[in-house]
Length: 73
Image (cartoon, helix red, strand yellow):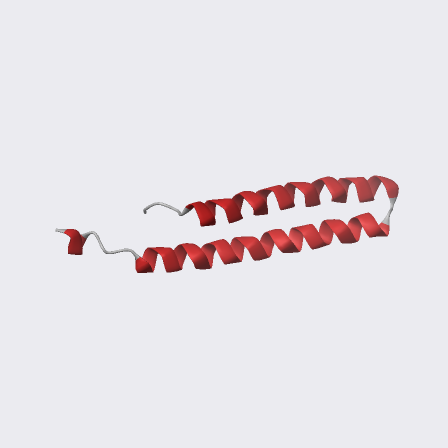
């Protein structure tokens, strides 16, 4: 439990938009058969995945750097 930093939230929001864009482009590529659109979709999906990994790592580092609840008492 706890809170996420604005940086982590920003990365997650960006990852969500990238994934939404990737899904849209995948649909467009399926309709048109355009390989370049499919490649762009793949790149966006991969960027989304990488951003989620980065957000997880940053959230863990943020949590580790905070004082524990026990030490505040």
